[in-house]
Length: 194
Ligand SMILES: [Zn+2]
Image 1 (cartoon, protein in one colour):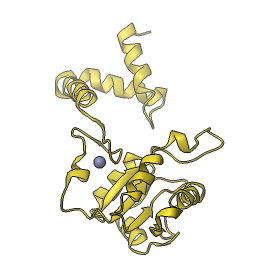
Image 2 (image 1 turned 90 degrees about the vertical axis):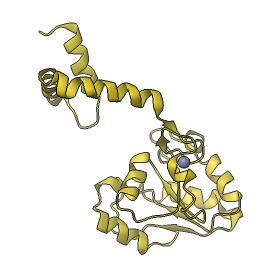
Image 3 (image 1 turned 90 degrees about the horizontal axis):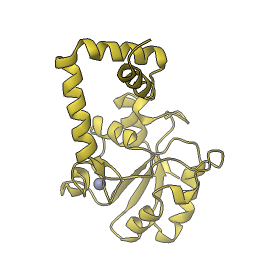
């Protein structure tokens, strides 16, 4: 129906989260109509981001510098380490400005069903960081239920560093990004021993 370039654009857009084939067509058409105002700047921004942004070697955050700006910030508390599933969860915490410690991005949660074992996640690097000695508390802010949290508790047991988790009010299986900042702040403040 359309030329191959348009079909390719629609096909790629359709792979984005939340976009099905129908909305991908709408987005493609919108971009094509706003070529100069939107499509070209977006294309340049995508190319820039693809070139410049990489995972932080320490925490797994995405940034243009490594260590990332959070790891490099001397005003943050080295003693508080918040473990999140994904960079999106880190962004949610940062959006609310509710946390001034450091992060560790696991890159997923344990799932036997999906074949995600400990080796697939950034767990070994977490154990090394905690063993480093400056961490006073590990806040496990994953929301997959208990599997990952319990596994982390086992792996970090030797460190004797206390583990906490967010208080109830955080829906299991959701993403922190869906919570409003007040709910997330309350869940963090009311965190409890794991
Ligand atoms: Zn970092």
